[in-house]
Amino acid sequence: MRNKGDDACGTCAACSKNLKYIHPDTHFVFPLSNVKGDKDPERFKAEIMKSWRSFLTEQPFGNLDDWTNYYGGEDKQAIISREESREIIKTLSLKPFESPYKVMIIWQPELMHPSAANGILKILEEPPPHTYFILATNAADKLLPTILSRTQIVTIRLLSDNEMEQFLVSNNELDNARAKKIANLAEGNINMAMGLLDKAEDDKRGAFHQLDACLLQTQLCRPGDTRR
Image 1 (cartoon, one colour):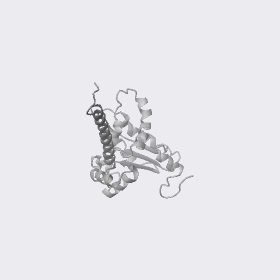
Image 2: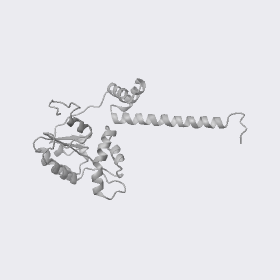
Image 3: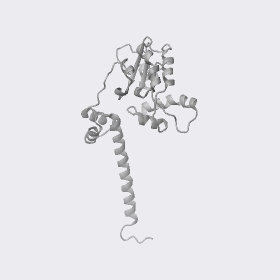
Image 4: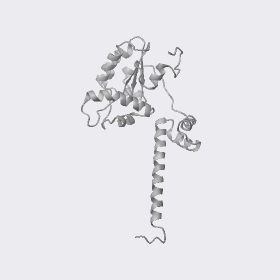
């Protein structure tokens, strides 16, 4: 069944594939650095998309540090290389497989190497028919002017404290008081809110471990205990 409406239905085959990040006409480009200890570029290339899909599923609000840590990248600046720009051109030269459209999503485009950015200028200005680019960035001011001038900027605002609180209550089974505290600290950033939530859970587990240790120590050393 194919959805013929103006918005995603969430139930058709195309929606199901996009929810799993496996639609053959939706393509992703993202920054990379070498994997620690991995000297086999072919193996790296074969595995990276699998890691990317898993990352989007498990950490849909993750940032660049989260991504680099997820796939085990080296402690150096991840970039979108010139080779990636060649892959973009090659991929978009093909006809779509299932959809009338092709979509190229470039995540963190401000991290394109200058040669990569210059390499996609022509296709960005004159894309093939029924081809759409989405450049997802939180640092548009760092994009090359030649890239920026070829795009239409759509700004997505941060969540309000009330929206963040509702999100935390609905998706993480938090009571309103805790959700409100985290929402106030997160300043509209869902990734930060999830990090604060994880830290709170870690602190809670640590407190329980400390309590268990104290109780055990008290039990071993209680008054009147004559054991040696």
